[in-house]
Amino acid sequence: MVVRDLDTAIVDWTKILRVLDPASLEKRLVKYDEFSSGADAGMKWATFVNDGGTEIQFIQPAPGTPMGDRLDKVGEHVHHLCYSTDDVPGAMEKLRAEGLHLPGGGQTHNDPDMTWQKWSWIGHKSTHGAMIEVASPYESLNDGKWHHAPGKFAYAGPGEHECFAEIAPPIAAE
Image (cartoon, rainbow, N blue to C red):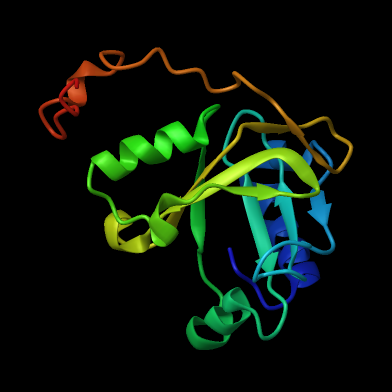
């Protein structure tokens, strides 16, 4: 979620989670006080970690950045959902083949402070609202930081979830 005041969002959501999802308060908050890369450099962010459920992340953008301008225009809002995969570039190629809206052409980005971290985006035109981040798998070791977790979300491949083939047929093999 994009927020105006990270510390206030943390306090408010701590109160919410204390009642609705206390497991999200068992691990230390992952918090970075300044993102140092790209056009949105200077943003702060924090995540409530929940290994068995939904993780909630807040982003406070720096003024004058693309995300800061979006906050000024749209207000506080859900920005994206995140799905993890061991092969971000490969997933983006498959998503491109599905004809989905991929901002920046599905380019994969790297974080210079977490060199293992790769990510890209599926745009809101294909998701019907919030963007989808496609990222390398990560985990918290309860130390307030993210760590690489390859294989965390292993997928057996086509056919694993056949019940959805009639809704969105798989891409024909080349």
